[in-house]
Amino acid sequence: METVDTRHGHLAYIHTGHGTPFVLLHGNTMTASSQERLAQRFADSHTVYSFDLLGHGHSAHPAYLFREEYFSMQGESLADALTRLFPKQAVPVFGMSAGGVSAMNAACHVPERIAALILDSVFAYAGPETLAAHRDSVANMSATWDTYLAKQHGAEWWPTLNAGLLHVIELLEASRRPVVPCLANITIPTLIFQGGQDPFVAAEQGTLLAETLPKARLIFDAECGHIFAWRDPAGFRETVRQFLHDLPS
Image 1 (cartoon, rainbow, N blue to C red):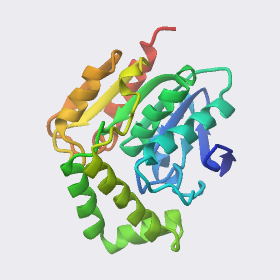
Image 2: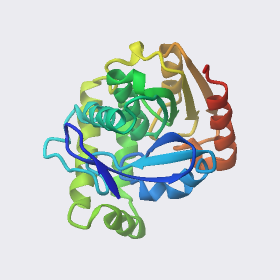
Image 3: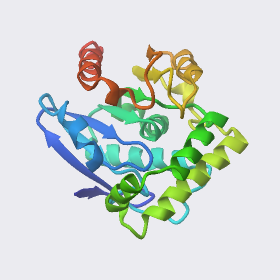
């Protein structure tokens, strides 16, 4: 994997395909490598840059990461990476769950580097349902999935990451601190996907984001759970492609 330096340490990334840049950000506990199949769906018309978030995969593990400022730090590191890799252009950024929250935080710092935001299953705050779903995920993780994630992150680091992420959500749920402090100031064209059966994100959060972001469009599916892109990959790809095609030049 290649790396790019940021204020919080290096971010690792992989890229595939040919065409204009398209940035893909995984959710918490996942990695860039775990989303290779999804990246391939856009690789025929884009060079897809898939990043490991801080603390994940091959990216840096800052000792101070697991605090209430977790998402702000993710956004700062992504902003630095976008500035270094794409110094003269704006690129679309697609983020799933925590990756989408990180993308919005990056937009607080470098809106000129982001042409559009595609947000899948994201939240403006950590509610009780968010914490309950995270606790359930940790408590009931299968041995097979636990082994897979240990291979993605390293067997020694994975338990620290898993516990640290839960601690972050506990802190945010207790404080109700907004996970994107500059949310109302984001004027980038935004496409939001929200499922009605998402255990991590209450359905009204998608509506809240769409009402707050002045250039947002919400796509809601009452039957969809967490991560819209996994429910109907082909349909998701075409919706995103049309959205990007319709952006003002």
